[in-house]
Image (cartoon, rainbow, N blue to C red; front, side, top):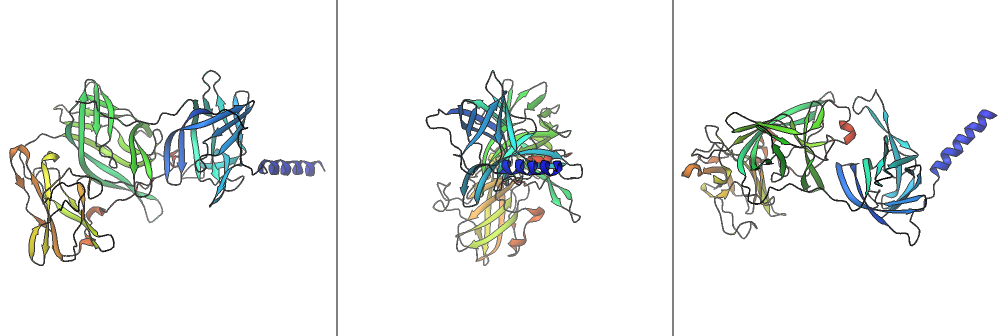
Length: 494
């Protein structure tokens, strides 16, 4: 009888825990809300983000209300209880209801599992989650081992999103800021050479690394003891990071904010981090004896957050080479992609690879580099004319286009590949080619016209090059936990 009674009590306790009212919570009328800065790591189905945002807090006696813990229901309030320096929020609080159903806030706890070779464990449902409060500063920190998220079912750990490492600090949130060199500091052109590390699934179901050489434009600016580097992020090539000069080295601290990248599907904040010895860290570039090369000591990552490895792009063996302007003949360009004219959207597209080195492999100044497109229409060969009335970034018709022209719409420079929208019907083209022109060292030199011999452009994608759209996450924060390196389906824009 005693055993049955205990079993009944356990069942009733669980039922009561899951039977919290389905009414949304709101603070008492007239209660004053105060701003708090929420910072933390947010994992969603499509990203791992470092978040800094302002939430509202109301405290009435031991009741503690927070508006902003819900990712999907931004106006929803969650209610906790203050006791002994800790704020405890019960699970299964209803945040609201939308077309997808009910939205409940639930606590989560990480459970280690040695048999899980991929993640080493998983999150399990917890009846509550807690914040520890600093009595002097008023800062609340998510208690060790605690996480929380949102789901459509009470008592479920199958969440749509997940919060980790959350702090609540009195006052307004201050978002991340991008780095900009001081006015008047003149950057110098360098070229980046590296190997892009990607992973693809093998036939056995595992992951096989794929290494692709990359080359692109970088810039370095020096202001006293400060150094600024541009071009380490393939998604945002104009973004800068800031470091310090130290005895023949440039040290770039990890966690710097590149800025937001807007794809066709979403907007994602991107961060600079280094990765080496199985840990996130700063990146040190060391000058060569002649001062013309900088070599990185770690992988350079474009990351989805400031602290944990969850990369969009991994570059290994990163070397920056200073550009010394001289006369030279540009290396041979080539057409790497073609999309025929689309009557519905009224455009076609061509991708051309424009080497940024000369025929002797020496770096060329890209502001002296340009290209032409050549078309063959039924035996009549001529330059493609970029009409200013069809291209928003042009003020006059052009046949020769600067390599550096990139508006991410009609002209998009991606490393050494330029994607160009074609605004005239292409059905009559029998061949399409490209020519490079270089004016370095006060001389004009050009490579011969490179012409595609037939209309099989759809198959012209050497090295797997293709049009890249979208900035999608590569792995969740927990996927990186316990890994030797941040493997994932790296989505490289380079």
